[in-house]
Amino acid sequence: MANLDYAYRRLVNVLGPERVARAEYDRMVYSHDFASLPKPALIQWRLYPDFVAIPQTTEEVSRLVRLSDETDLPITPRGGGTGLFGGSVPNRGGVLLDLRKMNKILALDPNDRTITVEAGATWHDVEEYALAKGFSLPVVPADAPASTIGGAINSGSVGFGSMRHGSLRDSVVDLEVVLPDGSVIRTGPGLDGSGAFANLTPLFFGAEGTLGIVTKAVLSVLPKPEESKAVAFCFDRPEAGVRFLREIVDAGLSPYHASFLDREHFAFERALRRESPEPAHTVLVSLQGPKDEVAAEEKSLDTVGSSLKAERLGADVASDLWARRHTMYGARRLSRGLVVSHNLVPVDRLEEAVEAAAGLIRRLKLNGAIHAALVDASTASLAPYVLMDDTRPSGGTALGFVKKMGDAALALGGHPMGLGMLMVFNLRRMHGRATGAMGSVKHVFDPKRKINGGKTIEVWTKFNWPLINTIPPGAMAAGLNLAAFLRRIKPTRDRFVRAYGRTGGA
Image (cartoon, rainbow, N blue to C red):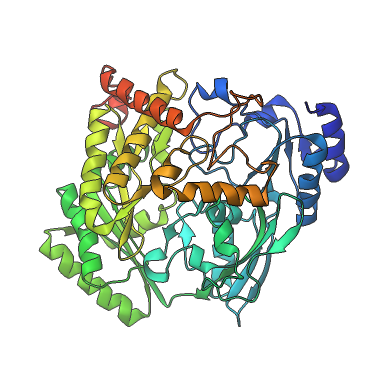
């Protein structure tokens, strides 16, 4: 049993009193990430950290990690808190490390075409810095204004630019990581990121902070594109818009980004922002590169659009949509919460996946919208979202939608993204027997399971006692299936009809 007063004094010895918080309000703001956890989570997890520690250097992070052996408190690293399923939220209290003060941009090397940054810097700030120096980042996560460098790397994010430049993982050259024993390593110095055995970077990418704490990253940069242009098309039917994405791939085009947004998304937008476009199924494409290449791809897009009877929107509308690309989920202001189901599916099954998402939203009597985007020539991102009221006991039943949408993605040859605490059961469904090997890797790096323990490969409860210290992943899946069932039998309520002019229950 940890002595919290003693632990507080030791933390203050490392950081000083101004960077250690223990007041209830200070701790409360770290008890959720982008979406609030359902009310039953309060029964099985201790979501408030005992302390919030705010390090500013790698050395301080190392000292705090070493201190956890002495205080017997688990550590939860956290960046911008934009995750979806509790990956940066405590489950047994402990010490939460808020890394956002480690936000320096340390160097941009124009010869090696790399930029070195601290893990707490946001992608938006790093991109703006690179652009000012005549460079750009190959890939930028959708939640760039709040998402930190370390957070996106830990979560294995996809983002804008991958269709043209490859995955985010490909742009990570090197990491500085504090291991669970407090030692500091570099994962790939001097390597080309091609997968050489000595390169440990891919091991930490997507590990959700369970193997160590990323404190610095070296990212590749590219020369700033000569031309950037946004174009947009609208469609009467959603399947035509989704087909447009398929045609982009079939035509061999390589836009910087291409995404589909359904009519419901713009109905939400219209309710919040009167100057938003009239609701319509819309495809937004960003083109970047040499001027002649951008012009040629724009002409090809017009040809594809004509074949699908699309209406091209004005340049000002397209530019406005692109400028607001990082504010996808403003609809949460229409309710008291919002749940996103992020999945990857094969491009040739995307139309089926979008149809499945729309069907689920109807059957579960939810208000929601559908967003899909090309990740590469064979993979698409599907991220439908639904409104919820997380102040009501029944609000968390909307999470049943995430479970069922993940089921649909797996059935179509894809998979859900993100595990955290709520979706650990998906690990075995995606990786089968390899799940055991992942647990072994965790044991090698962190035998005491003190860094973000009880997530990704297992689910802890707040009780560190035998028999009740973990939750079987299958039980979590069953609970979410029950939530989906309750959504189906729940009477439809027109809670948000006046807000955005459509029917459906919240």
